[in-house]
Image (cartoon, rainbow, N blue to C red):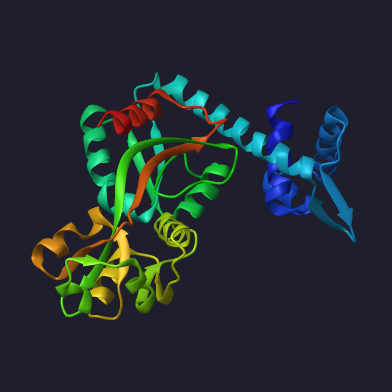
Length: 290
């Protein structure tokens, strides 16, 4: 099978329409059909179901699509590396929200000092979305606080992190030195959205201690959470790194919970089939050794 076959296959998958794929690639529809037929014959599987003149990707097709995307990207990386003699290049980074706000700027700044010729592109979202970008080869390396679910994603811890309970200065918790776990069940929580590693850690620890919680506000960023908590609209559990300034200024209060901790690790994640350039390897090493 050739690179041309894989490019045609990926284009058909992206459009799920033979005619649209032909127009996109500026080739005939018969050439598209022939390439797909050759792939199916070569691998002896059916890649698409053709029902009521519509295409549906089979399980075999889904598997091949993952490999095909990375074969195409790997070819591009090889060509780029050969042309640039490993001196330049681009790293497409994905960062979950907490990592992006508290850790990534310092890491990228340090990397640019040792590799100024490398371009860094950053996309920030929750862990679930970063994982999807890695699987779709839209991101090369992810730095996340949550757990990935796909077996195709490799994960390496690189930094410890702790979530802490925060409240506003006028909240009843502000006057207490230690909070009893059952008191959390009486409070309104302001927390991150589904797919966030912070939310997953919070829910897992609470469930492990048989504690219930009431969510009244769901946010996709830490700034909104901190502002709402400061106004006394509820409490939250958030990365200690994200509230250091507000706690030092007295705008927010950080409280220990008796017998309960929210510990986790930040992780470097990338696709198991990802071709890691020298620039990417250098970036990963910097994260681990800092």
